[in-house]
Length: 153
Image 1: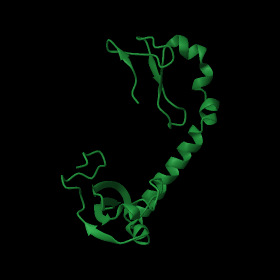
Image 2: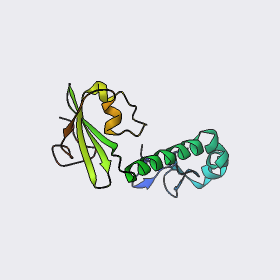
Image 3: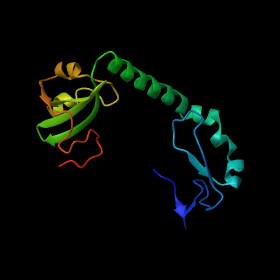
């Protein structure tokens, strides 16, 4: 979710005041920056502390996220294609793209096969093949994109 603005001025996430507001990042780079006016920044000092962010699992989640990214990078570097995007084609088919060192490679599979491996887990075509039939597909979606951020027809 984005920040709020009033007449083009950033609003404080705590009190709603507009103007003279700054964004303060999570000390672990995990959660959304908090927009705060000077008064709220001083009154709510604990909310901006490492201790507060640790209590809300920012440090642990940041470490886990970075480990996942490193694992995916290591897999790709080792020559294994890793799931990066998917698009539902129809009720029986999901078009899945896998990142490689040369770009992407595509596979078709059933929704049941696709959903057999959670989204948080790096997965290869062989991982999916252990759960169902997969078939070679184009290396990009129909419009040439490789992102999940396209309209699903």
